[in-house]
Length: 324
Ligand code: SAM
Ligand code: SF4
Image (cartoon, rainbow, N blue to C red; front, side):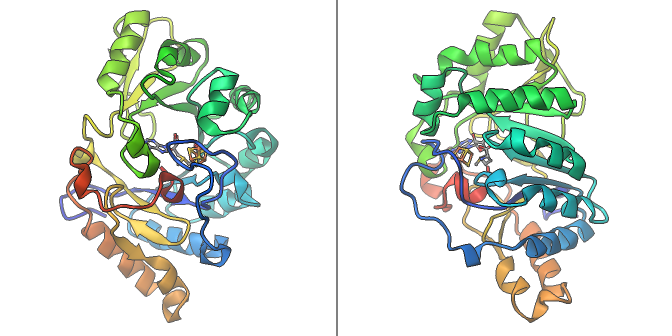
């Protein structure tokens, strides 16, 4: 369906847990309180929301978290969502730590694409950023994914003075392998506020300094906001998600379901529909109220975020609770 600004809303990110196997300092620092398990939507409730959303035109679902694979039987949820009429694609964003173990099940479930978050290729630095010594598990998962032929993207958040010296090394992953590398600007959400973003444009300049100017790649790379470039001799493309400095709100196509059942219409604002309440009350079985709430949330989607005026951001949740 279209929102009140005429944007076609067809993509839903679904956070299935606020638990995580890592403690990325900009997302889920040590010691934060977790949501009570009974507040987290069950698989059946998530599927119900996806069914209602599909009737309103959502055709692509990205399963995220927290860490989606930290939730038991996550591949089963993927196949449940894949079975919904109207849902054409189901993808996942993962930190990759548990991916190798679950890859066969995910392929069997029919997953359409996997994004792996990886900010550094240096083991010590990986531990500094994520709080855990898991780099080899993640690079192993990248290789295993490549072997399956599944559509694969690497997401890297670049932090000035922490990993900006690895921009070329990370970009090289797309030179050597048939995968896309996307550089994501740090967003001022949760602990992300403590790390001023390195502008996507500056990251692109550094990629170009190393690999020459890329050609704009307008082929379809999924339904995300990245701008892609192709460099000579590369097997994959480089994408830039300049959330803060190059707003893509005019073409925003998405809503976000948090693990505790809130449907968010914009990352920036603490607004949205409480679907859990509707799912767990009398509306649960006729679905009408859930569908109506989704429709209302889409229609109330704001025109644009306010990342450049941080005092106007009303979202207090951390990215780990929102799902990215
Ligand atoms: N745990 C999974 C993972 O790391 O891929 C999925 C959830 S994580 C919240 C999704 C994405 O959000 C990751 O690529 C992560 O790097 C990114 N992210 C987290 N906090 C962010 C922030 N403040 N600004 C930009 N991206 C952020
Ligand atoms: Fe966990 Fe992903 Fe957040 Fe890192 S970015 S703490 S892996 S949810």
